[in-house]
Image (cartoon, rainbow, N blue to C red; front, side, top):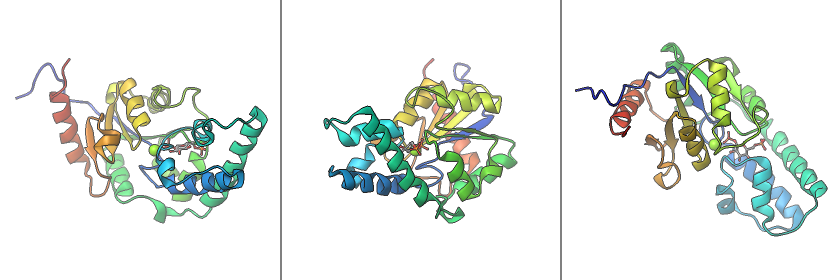
Length: 231
Ligand code: B16
Ligand code: MG
């Protein structure tokens, strides 16, 4: 029985985060930051890297240096150095680096007439999409150059929806980071979180990954989520 208080979502587009959703560049970012941290004699490990998920380049560096003092010139130089290491490493990426289920869902959504956008904090998003061979499968790219305010601000996803020509309430964001889920909710969009509830539990739908995920199932889960919402 439909609940008139909870309109069935009219989904017209999907906005995918890139790192941690379509591909696992978190490890590549880790290797680049680790090289920089080693050179600077700053302790850094994979556990500390988890806190950098979805966090902008500058904010990531700030978390790594902690209360050590560096000049603005040194900060800029370290950001550039880390990025050189990262750019070098992503040249080795291929379509094999797409996460399980990503291509199948993208293709299924496209066939269903649903628009596809990318909402990534990364300034290297375009290069990564090219290396993954999926540039032709996306209708819009919002990346590290698109807006000023990083996630958890809604700006990046609102920019992507505008590019797609759809409204926030017609958009589904797929994210792996807490800041990304918060950004999607702040934008008034549907949020699908990938990963542990401790990280993405605020999302309308939480999934372990995109592996085996069908649009019909996802739509049903979003409809149930809309019914349990209070307006
Ligand atoms: P860059 P996403 C984010 O991408 C990464 O998760 C984060 O680790 C990285 O620091 C950030 O992009 C900026 O990337 O240094 O390449 O501009 O998860 O929003 O796709
Ligand atoms: Mg991410």
